[in-house]
Image (cartoon, rainbow over all chains, first blue to last red; front, side, top):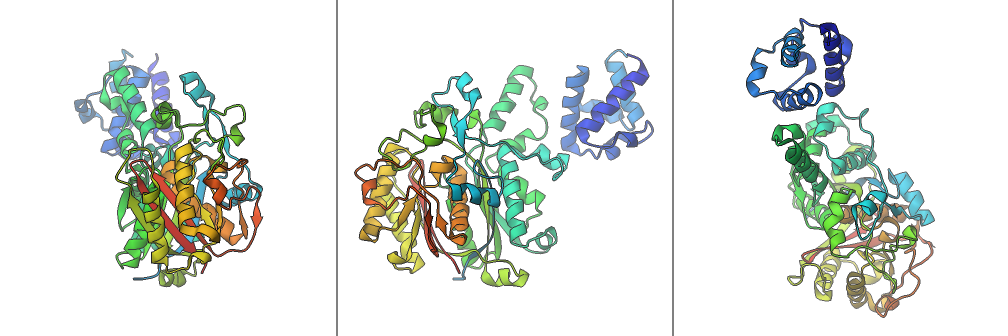
Amino acid sequence: MEKTELIEKINSILAEEFEIDKTIIQPEKPLMETLELDSLDLVDMVVVVENNFGYKMKSDDFAGLVTFADFYDFISSKTGG
Amino acid sequence: MRRVVITGIGVYSCIGKNRHEALDSLYKGKSGVGIDPVRKEMGFRSPLTGLLTPPDLRSSLDRKHRNTLPEEGAYAFAATSEALEMAKIDLDFLEKNSVGILYGNDSTADAVVSSMDIIRSKRDTAMVGSGSIFKSMNSTVTMNLSVIFRLKGINMTVSAACASGSHAIGMGMLLIANGYQDVIVCGGAQEVNPCAVGSFDGISAFSVREDEPTRASRPFDKARDGLIPSGGAATVILETPESAARRGAPILGEILGYGFSSNGEHISNPNVEGLQTSLEMAIRQSGLARKDIAYINAHATSTQIGDAMEAQAIDAAFGSLKPYVASTKALTGHEMWMAGASEIVYSLLMLHNDFIAPNINFETPDEYSAKLNIPTQRIDTEFDTFLSNSFGFGGTNSTLIIKKV
């Protein structure tokens, strides 16, 4: 999958799951604050990633995820994209 | 002791998704019972159920609130929103006052089973998502509604089988009467899905009259063959008359009596003595003469033994006075954890619209129901006082008496 295609897919999934306007998602924006994620929502993020990308996230994985760009790179690296 | 009145009612059930729809069904004697084909496929002995679907709350609640709210919680949110609006209570009032919640609930089977299905299949507990634990606890309704409505007072679920909703109202009355709270949201909720009633079906408690679903629930009828599980949620707002007056809220009725008892005997079979104790306690506490009670909303669920025991208890308490006795379960099926609250809502709707809904499907009395005055057609009559019975597994009994103010 092309990176732009992957980013579009990720944005659509996050917007639907966390019920936000997709247009507010920008690569440099902070992931947690923009999606209004609290500690409980991280569990739902684990479910979203496994169900959509087949990777089982561990709690350590969240440490390096600051922006959406970080998240795109993370998913890309785990899915061979 | 302070007086306790009801200032708001709300309901979401198989006979109406709000009080107006429920009133229409009660007036017309319209049943909400039907067939659930899924239960048939699953091998249930009875596919009969009250038919209803959860409200779509996407425009009312954000994702975080919906994420932790199970089916019965969605019903309770709808009923409570309606009741609060009727009582003229808004979020600003809830923020600034100590309002409590006591709600009846006694299962979260669908949430528990669904999460275990995922855990067994994925071998990973995280895959159930963050909302599952909050949907799976028995106090799910009170924990969710207290967060959604920002409640600051007593916050507790009352679990007492099919008397849960009635006891929740009774307990609310006691807290307000004794000065601990001014306003409490009370009610009962009941999930409607195969997981919730599979084991209940397993003890052959349900009617199998599936060729005529709307005639299957036949409280007090000689040919009754079991109850029809049903559900939804019903809410009543309890408070002092002074609290109601400060907001100009309507006063729908005053709770004059709350009787209770435990049979201390069989796990599922009621006895006459326990029911009588609850009835007599409520009557005594109300200070009313028995002749003043015009209508008895019976617990009667359409089971052979339960209805027979209740008929004997009512006859022992009221004898030749012969008040109208009818079970709205003829229309709704048995709303179980919710029933004690919904039947207060239904009775108040009838009280304020001058009629008593028919005990449909009562065709032939048995030796006990023959002694009662059971209307099979709607009775158009003004009345101002009713008594509502609720009984549950384990022999828990509750009786409420409410009078128009």
